[in-house]
Length: 376
Image (cartoon, rainbow, N blue to C red):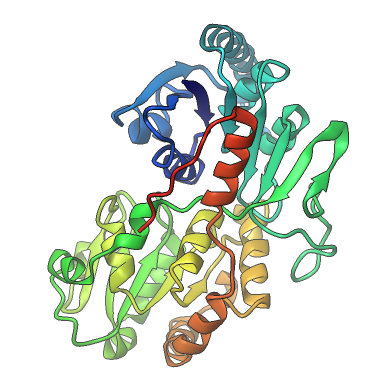
């Protein structure tokens, strides 16, 4: 039996691709372990899953801005590195697969030289954690095809390039991102019952990520009188962001959904979303025409803007900069997206969004296992 250690955390986007891969590892052949923090979302999503042994370590956030926690977090990083080294020695994994986030850095560093290490980068431009982790990895899996210059202009990514060799022999492979197989099995009728909708109108699904998107929520609610003339709306608002005063026929809010997401994706005709890479590629894989409202520069490092431009440049999505939107422009854009939905869906069919198979091939290549397919 082969043993694999997964790591990644901090947000759901650093965990759900790991889940997609875990489900495809034959139980008779693979012993699955996960290294994350004791308090992070990764523990909530992973610890109760069958077949997975969870190990908690300390981890300090990697910041490039002033914070009092910068005084204490380096010590947490060092403790996490010591804990990771001990775990890697005990577990003796055949493969380590990292999805990113600050918890992954000490795990990847500890595994270097002891087993093959694969790191997956979701966004067009890498975050600090993966830029560090790539120095210790054997294979870097990229979601986006890198270009110079990046979509919409700007500086080329430090991980620019296609498949091939990079510094210290790092092998880079454009794979796409792992897509959870259950997302392909959504049930429209179940979603209508769950949301309490009739199905008489086209459905707009609004997603702001696991934490929600406050500015997008406010914009949508201001546009409800006109949006509801065209659409029924399912709004995933984020925890603590449901507005009871906004309740009206045809507008349904949920703080967060888990198992029901596949059904809601099957139900929706078009979507409005932030531009995190996992959400973007899940919507692309399911051929759901989407308007993307990326986090603006003042609230991010600009990765979502690059993700949105990449999708828009290929005709796969509509890019709506947050600072340019009003209730009127948002309504007009979403109506136009709906009218052109078939053209968007046709273009999206040519995209190779689901990276599950390619990444599994790499894992089995370095781990000397055999892959089975269970996608319906």
